[in-house]
Structures are given as structure tokens and as C-alpha cells.
Amino acid sequence: MKMKLLSLNGLGISYTNDRRFDLALAYYEQGLKISEEIGDRRTAAHILNNLGNAYVETGREELGLETLRKSLVLSEEVGDKVTLEQALNNIAIIYVALGRYADALEYLQKSLKIIEEIGTDRDQPGLAIKLQNIGLVYRRQGRPDQALVYYEKSLKLMEESGDKFGVANVQNNIGVAWKSTADYERALQWFQKGLSGYEAIKAKGGVARCENNIGDTYRLLGRHELALEHLQKSLQLREEIRDRVGVSLTLINLGRLYKAQGRSAGLSLATRTRGE
Image (cartoon, rainbow, N blue to C red; front, side):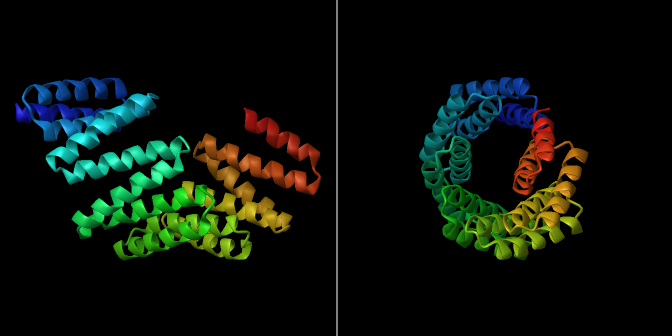
């Protein structure tokens, strides 16, 4: 029966990765029913965590939260710190999406504490991502100083683990934090570091993100020609990789630039294109 449980959960994970959530949910629910029938509470906690995530992915956030809370309680009762940490993190991610930043921070801090308690060298990338997520929440709260503390801790771990993509990602986020303090020159330095890192590993999405941030920072500095150059590079890349959300963000920044230049025709084009 234990093998069947593992098989059902494994199938659910596989279909989740393929984004076939209807099938994923069916397998998770089967596994959960069996685990409850045979009294396997540890496996039930693990499946509840996966099931909660699947509910969230299908737009049922409240049901997802309810399911993840069940996983949290059960994993705490059976002493499964790994699943407990995952449930805390997943709940925090939902709270970030809902704009409930204080709640997100509470759960991320609890998750971080568990990682630090049970962590090994293999958990270093996970710890670095956790620190970065905490920094992100602080930045969205309008607390860039606190965000920078966590970003810098994350950057150190990313560098130690040799995660080149992670390093570039944190560098970009550090730039965003400095930009929010209006220290635009320092922001540009970090965006350029992130851009170089992304280019070295040919990460087009990251390159486009940094180009967008660099362009908008130049706009704020009144250096409109450089702003246009970088924003156009970002737009071209984002259209190339079919990043529709990214295209919209870059077009918004182009619209702001055109407005600053008094180019109503350009602003009209950016607004029209963004809506398509």
C-alpha cells in the first residue's frame, strides 16, 4: 500500500509539472484518501501540501490555503520538518500574491528558521532563495533597507554555490531596491552586473528584465536617448521570447518615456500596442 501511495503522489507531481492539474488533483486526492484510511499521517501531510499547491494553480486560492494549513498542522504533529517548511513557504507565496505582506513575512521567517535548523550544504540554494523572497517582501512593503540586508545575504550564498543565474537575479533585485531609494547611479551599477551575468549564461528573460530596468532608470535620470535604447532592446527580446507580461511592462515604461519627451504619438503607439 505504501508503494501505491508513493506512486499516486509521484504521478500527481508529474502531472503538476506538465501543468495538467485536473489529472494531478485526481491522483493527489486518491493518495490522500488512502493515506487517511491506513493512518499514514506523514504521507497525508506531504500529499496535502502538493494538493494545496495544485488548487492554487487552478485559481482556488482559498481552498489551497485551507489545504496547506491542514498540511502544516499535520506535519507539525508528526514531526516532519521538511514538509512543514514547504507548507510554510507555500502559504507565504500565496500571501505575497494576495498582497498580505505581513502574513507572508511571518511564514517566510518561520520557514527560514526551520531551514537553518535542519539545513545542510545541499540546502544552500534553497536558503538563498528564501532570503531573496524575504527581501522581495520587504521591498514591496516599501522597506528597501531591510530588503537589501536579505538580498546581500542571498547573494553571498548564491556566489558560494556557483549559481550564476541566481547571482544575476539577486543583482537585478538589489538594483531595484536601490532604484526605489532614488539612488539611480547605484541602481544602474547593480543592473549592469545583473545584465552581464544573464548575458554570460544566455538567459534572455533576465537580459530583457535588466534592459527594462536600466532603460527606466535612465528615464528617471533624464537621459532619454539611453533610456530609449535599452527599453527597445528589452521590448525586442520580450517579444522574441513571447513574454506577454514583460512586453506590457516595457511598453508602460516606453509610454512614460514618450510622455517625458512630449511625444504624444509615441505614447499613443505604446498604449495601443500594450492593449493588444
